[in-house]
Image (cartoon, rainbow, N blue to C red; front, side, top):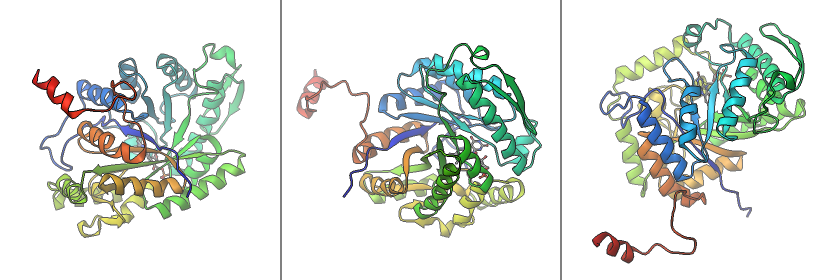
Length: 383
Ligand SMILES: Cc1cc2nc3c(=O)[nH]c(=O)nc-3n(C[C@H](O)[C@H](O)[C@H](O)COP(=O)(O)O)c2cc1C
């Protein structure tokens, strides 16, 4: 039996709000800076390796937030979503380099071409799916050269730039040749851009066999460009000490979701989504409450009302660890997890699941070799 190395465990920053219930205002937490700061500080200390900050009309801007959070954290890497087309590649490269230097090499970039025309039009982007990915490819051609300090003279259909190389960017990024690039498109065009340009390919939590098929296509696309790509999984986790507690928590999470809310989400998806990734997520459950078990411990309840990542692994620590190992066996090395609410669930995942995964829970001030002594703890507390 081969021993698998520890997974990189990332978390998610709920920059459009958080709460204990999906589809309900009850207990809703707005994305106030003080709250997001608490989450960032907690996950940094708990030992998560990174945090994903999404982009979109309903999110607080990830760049600004990450710049404010970087000095308040020590190890956490910031996977900031970036929409090509709303920023020039040169400007985006300068921002990336500045953040990489401010944070001492803790920037990761998630390239988000986008799949919701309504949201994109609000940003002034009117291209169709095919042309959007063409623009993404042009953006990355320019961005990669400028961020690496290489000369470029490029004229594409949507974007162009002429740069003399390092003189355009005299202060290089900490990470070489540039901060790592991630992408999460599931369409043929998305997979092609992944193969040509990025370092890490991300998928939402489809069953492992479907994930494996997509990864094979990405590997094949990358090979055509003489490159290799690593893989990440974006999924929710509902981990409790026992299976029955975990399933009760899953039911509780959607206990206030009305049929009307599900119908509205389905209609919205049918009306506005051009995302192949979103289509694949919705096809798992077809918005039916009685079709939420889409694999062993794989539950699609979140996707009834939430766009994007719509599945969760639900179970006790050993079982969820085993299920994650199945994704690892098909190539995943990074898991971008989340749970509602994101502060409390970060603790649960770190304290219950990390030991089962062999991931070190950070923040311990106990000297090495000194075991936890409950007797001592009680004496100190009594004193
Ligand atoms: C892990 C992950 C994170 C994503 N984050 C965002 C995001 O922050 N904002 C957004 O609009 N789309 C996001 N997406 C959507 C994709 O970037 C992509 O634009 C969309 O799925 C359309 O591409 P496709 O048709 O190739 O699947 C994300 C996708 C994945 C897998």
